[in-house]
Length: 247
Figure 1 (cartoon, rainbow, N blue to C red):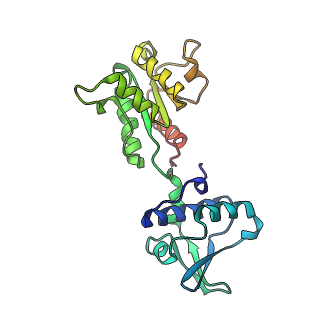
Figure 2 (spheres, helix red, strand yellow):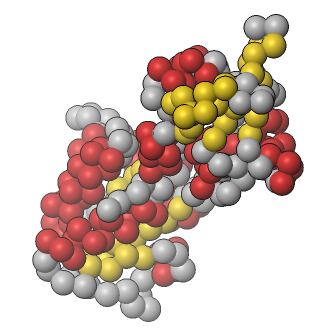
Figure 3 (tube, rainbow, N blue to C red):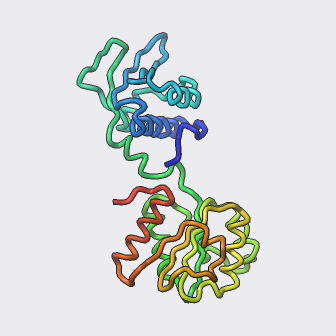
């Protein structure tokens, strides 16, 4: 899981609320603080007090460096359901709040949808490509790239190469004859040159010594049988690799 404390602070006020709630949740999962927070107000400025803060100064510096103590108002986090009043409303340092389950669920997705390029040979993997695209959209990734997005008259080579170079993940669907495709071979080459994270899904075949090194040396997912359960397992493994939680 990426450390959201290392990401830049959003400028939009509402995005700041979501980002701060995610930062709080991340610290809880790492044991840097508990779900209990106290907020005090002095001269109209809120100060957040983190339980166990003095135990992990490195983690503290991470969140304070990112936000420079200019956290979103507690009232906004409460409005969005990310915090709720504690049973002990008033504490020695301010008003007591508890982080909610909604805030923790923010960690089930990447902080921003990663760019994903899906490479496949149409006569080998079209149904699987559409399934991967649909599941990514359902998980909250709005724009995974499949070649159906190329419009008539558009230069294929330029569009494919440019999109791969801008993608974080390159997902290659490999069927029995997929690697005989010149286009797929070229896309794999471009992805390796662009330092994309390459993930291959093998269905109806297994990786062997003829597989390009760019795929052989990286994460691979294998569909071991032609059943809905096997494909669902493969899709879940892919989503996890992209930062999405599955159950």
